[in-house]
Image (cartoon, rainbow, N blue to C red; front, top):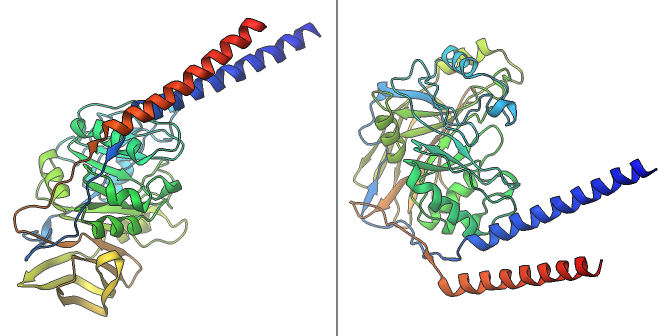
Length: 398
């Protein structure tokens, strides 16, 4: 009986210790991040229209994936395949750029067909999956908030990541409510948004961000964890318009929006041979041109539907069974983006053409609200002191 009593006591003490650790972690989360004042963004405006596809070379579309996991950290994190197995699969499928995005680790394995290694990793391990892709990362941020994050928590993490990476992307933002529509209206200092993966479609958040005046471009990724799964691998990719696959050229194309998000048509559990054939025969974007205020888009193959969307995702025009579309920007159009569905079910997501002043887009930076930060930290400090004193008194009585 004494042995079982000791076991129960040990379990109880362990449980109390875990609760204390979680409470301390929560205290750190809500104490360390400042409270931000977010600038009021303005919708895209101006007489000029930024065309991310201006000057794109029809023959230079490179197939890329920026969100894929290999087995890492001794198998503790979610990744079932070795680096070589990942590379072999994507080489077979005909990809040009593969950057491993292991959790909290810059994997230095280089994809053989790629001209130059591009560092990348996925940051984040909190319960709400507020994750970030860091393309061109120079170091890893191991810090994160475990519990549901306030918008100031989210901005604080972005600000910590920003100096250590060339491009910062919000990964699968619509997953588990990690990023809300109100968040993308206010958050600043990030470059890309993963609009489509095998797990989430976040185009609604993208339209919300664009409608608020945030010039963010797309990523489209498998976000695969098991290279053997044909329902995940080779399903979502990003076409990057670049002549060479070195770090500077790929990142420059991503930053300028010379990219297309692709959802590859596929049947459930189809073979990788069939997937390879579909990917090898992908249509391509011939051009997106601007003649004054008229958008002209041309494709290499007939699309089942070309849909043009504007502010808040409102449909501006639909053309069926055509290789091209034209559209005149209206005075109230702040941006126009295209969704192209081909006859086999493959979907292209294009970056938006946006109004601007002809030179650059407005930059927005949040500022720390010192008064609210001090008040918030003071309140948490008082609560922690009261809890500590209560605990000490109880220990003293016992």
